[in-house]
Image (cartoon, rainbow, N blue to C red):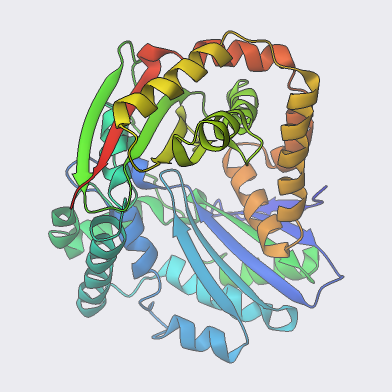
Length: 412
């Protein structure tokens, strides 16, 4: 149970406080309600580029990292299709430094052309190293546009292509900043050895003067129901042939999200899962085989992926997976099997709440979803899933016409 208090500043910044006086540390987490899904198809990768630009200095602070390190703090950030999240961990007695740093870059980013060029180069290099030159790195550059035809989940957070980052102008950057990096589009959580009154004072002092803005209206195309199987082939210099299959499913707030998530665990979480037991351990068709969900806010994907054993043909491996999936989708599921994955899921939740930073992140995400109390409801939602729920979503999700398949071939 994560206990919290909350208040909203006049400029719309939503602030949550989670007190934990058993630690000497504090975490400050700011989640901006903007991700790669908010980009347009001709200018992608901007949310991720901004993650980098936010560390390039602001109006009154030339070096963000240097100032933070002097106070004993650490920081990082991440971008997803749905959100951009920035966080600091710092000794609690230096928490005001975190307020100072984050408020300054929310109020007035540097917009130094030199910073843009440096960070542009960093992102382009990351695109090359992580997505183009790494084995299997470009899988999601191919899978997303295969699975999504209308929704902006069709490109990865790094962007659709390098040219979009190469062509980004300072006007583009300013427009993106003033459309999304607004106090009224942010959720701030301060957690650890702090008090509510302390956070109220510091929030008013550092964030109160920042003016609110007008967030760009979100207008994302709804992905139409997939009605026919899709298929694509790719090849690269990779160690083994690989198979990727995606199935459309409900978003994070869908009543079917947790049943589908647990279904994916039954299929492919760990060595006792259905797919691993049958096709890796017993038949030796794959060397690895997993199933998982992407946990998107909007309707997302369940994914099955695996690396093939040497000598096995992709079409044969795919047929084995499809036959097993067809059989599973018609079966009843036992309480014993469901309880096993429920216990695994709850253990993951509990372990994730050990660190105060993770609690801060989870609280911010729940608030962005529309109800901060969701952070304390997840275990209950997991426990309420029944074998009948699993059977129902298996029949609706694991259909041939709802599947997109990628054969990724190894070449010399």
